[in-house]
Image 1 (cartoon, helix red, strand yellow):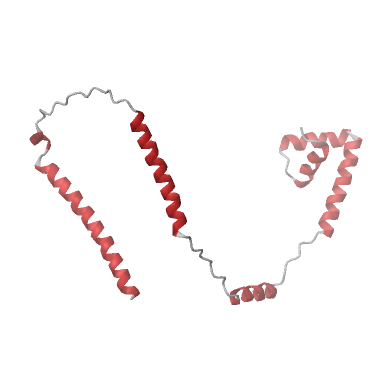
Image 2: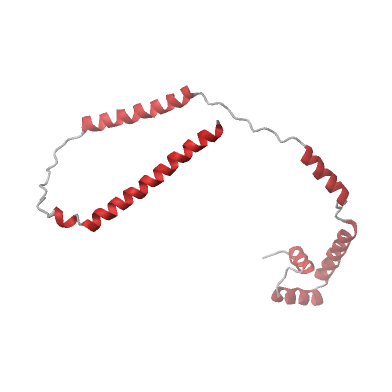
Length: 162
């Protein structure tokens, strides 16, 4: 529940819905203390409206500032050089850790799994039809063209930099 001041500020600012507005107007007609508080808050609001003026700079000031900003030299972004030894050390640490975990896992594992037999008597010639081969060849050709395009673009960029 909101206190009386919050209700009155919302009423003064016009943020109340119709039910709250009717309730506050009813309180204003019957409750003397509530009405006195409303009058005080209304005076404060009027004083704020009178004495609080939002100062805006003139257009010439804004234009001058923007011109000065345009004349400023843009700061150069700093690029830090990372020592490759640090990267290699971190990568080596993780690689050795993973390798150690794999060695430990294989050393403590008990391989007592029964391998099931696989029936390979499926007719493979029925699966590999001419249409299937054409689709595979088409996909391979498309991938080759994409790779060739990226390869040639890199070559053209190197040529244009020289």
